[in-house]
Image (cartoon, helix red, strand yellow):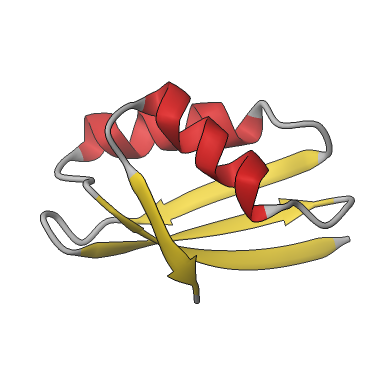
Length: 74
C-alpha cells in the first residue's frame, strides 16, 4: 500500500473536490482519494493506492475532472 500527497491549484468548492476525488479514485489501484480544500489557494490531495502512481497519471485525472493543476508533491 502506498500513500502519496499532492498539491493542487484551481479548486474553489465542494463540487471541485468531488470531481477530483471521483477521477483520481477511478485510477487503477487507488483505494482512497481525499482532498483538503483551500478555496482559491493550494489544496492537498491524499491518495492511497496499492501501487505508486506517476505524476502524469494524476495530472491526466485532474484534466478529466476540470481546470485543476498539479503543483507538486506534498
